[in-house]
Length: 167
Ligand SMILES: Nc1nc2c([nH]c(=O)n2[C@@H]2O[C@H](COP(=O)(O)OP(=O)(O)OP(=O)(O)O)[C@@H](O)[C@H]2O)c(=O)[nH]1
Image 1 (cartoon, rainbow, N blue to C red):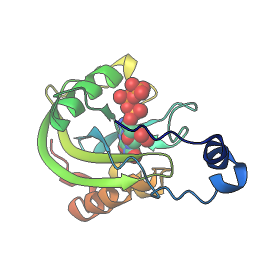
Image 2: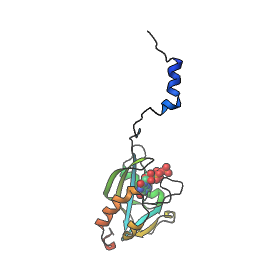
Image 3: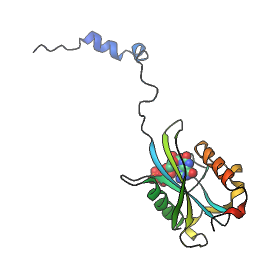
Image 4: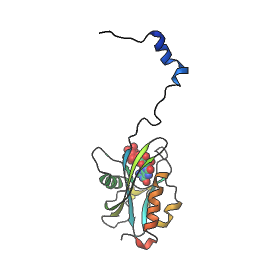
C-alpha cells in the first residue's frame, strides 16, 4: 500500500494564517435545536411570569416556567416538571398552544408552549419567587425574548379579556 503523506510544504500551507481564511465552513455547522418545554400557567386571568437569571441565556428577560427536555422526556412532561421545580406549583396541560424552532444568535431552540392550569387552585408557593402572577393583558408590555413573540400574539387573540381565564 502506498501511503501518501502531506509534505511539510503543504502542511505549512494548511496552517498558514492567510490560507485559513479561504477555508469555507457552512454558516451553521450544528443544525440541532434544543428541545424546550414551557408552561403558560393561567389562573383567574393571570399568568405566571418570572425573570431569567442575569447569568443565564437571555438573562434579565421575562420568561414562563420551562427549560430543556431531559433525554427521552416529552416537551409536555418537561413543562410540568420544570414548572414544579421552578415555582413549586403542580400543573396539568390544558392544550398545546404553539411550537416553533427559533434561532437566537448563539443557539437554536425548539420551543413548545403549553397552556396549563393548576391541579389545585392555590396561591403561588413561596419558592415561586421570582415568579409572579401577572394580568394577561400586561404580557405584551413585558420584556419577553423574541422567541416568545408569536405565542404572546396567540394568547392576546385567544384571551381578549382577563375574565376568559380557565378557572
Ligand atoms: N424557561 C423559558 N425559556 C425560554 C422562554 N423563551 C425562550 O426563548 N426560552 C429559552 O429556552 C431555553 C430554556 O433553557 P433553560 O436554560 O432555561 O433551561 P434549564 O432550566 O433546563 O437550564 P439549565 O439546566 O442549563 O439551567 C433558554 O435558551 C431560554 O432562553 C420562556 O418563556 N421560558
